[in-house]
Structure formats: structure tokens, C-alpha cells
Image 1 (cartoon, one colour):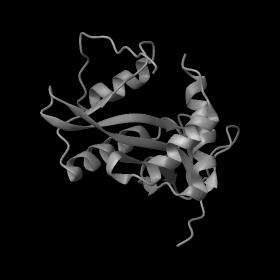
Image 2 (tube, helix red, strand yellow):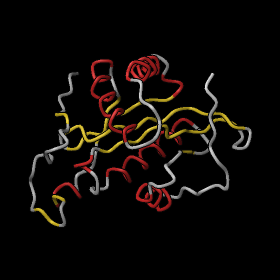
Image 3 (cartoon, rainbow, N blue to C red):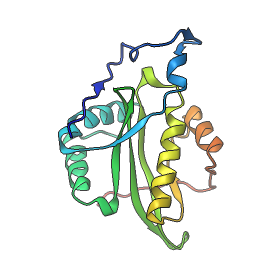
Image 4 (cartoon, rainbow, N blue to C red):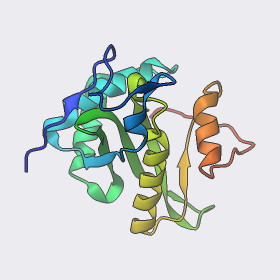
Length: 178
């Protein structure tokens, strides 16, 4: 079945059906997002959003590597998935929930690897809905916990995650590339 969702352009607001209140369209506060499984035909659209996500942080972005990893994940669904966030026919973001394994957690856990909501779709409750979706994905797979990483200066995201039940740890995330 072919899905048609309109890509978000950073200088426009999604189709309006409500009155503007507080900089947001009230209509969208009550519209539940749909989480559509990523297909090979949609990878380019999500990779474009990945570039915007990575531009907000300090990590370098390699589009070819991101595309290759995403396409490989599509063929290995046991390791998790990527979903597009659809808001009334508009591509509003994406979420990637992947499999991790930890002795600390007694086995498998979910890693919220990436969550991006387009700038003009923020403040509409999509982040909260995405976290609820990630939670449901982990529970359905029998994963024992959901972890994520967040920028130390990204207070808005930290507050959202804390309100959703995530806890800070007195540890640092460190990486060594192989």
C-alpha cells in the first residue's frame, strides 16, 4: 500500500485547521501522530532529517554511512526499527528504536537511538507521543528497559524525558570508534 505524506519544509507550518494560539495551531494538539514503518522508498527523506538532527549537536554526519546503516536495519528488523512520524499527512519527524543488551538490565533493552521532530512541529506533543510509541515497542518485544542519550545542554529534551519517566545517571557516555 502506497503512503503519501508530505515532507516538512522548515519555513512552513503543517496544514491548518485550527486557530493559532501561543504560536501553535490548536488543531494539532488533539491530533494523534501516526508512526509509519520506514521503507526503502522513504530512506532519503529520513536521512535528510538526520542531517538536521546531527547539525544540532557535535557529532559529524556522514549521509552515506547513515543511509547504509538505515537500509541494513530495514533488512534486520530483529534489531529494531525506524518509523516516520506522520502528523495529518505531514512528515513531522522520525524515531529509531534499536536493540541493546546489558547485564545490568538482565538482557535485552531498547535504545532510543534517534528522535527528531521538525522545528515547525515542536511543541505539539509529538515528542511525548514518540516516547510512548518507543515504550510500547520495547514492551511488545519483551525488552526490559529503554535508554537514550541526550545533549548536556538540551534542557528542553531533558525535561521531556524526565516527565516521561527517564532518570539521569551519574555516568558519562563514552565512545571509541573501531
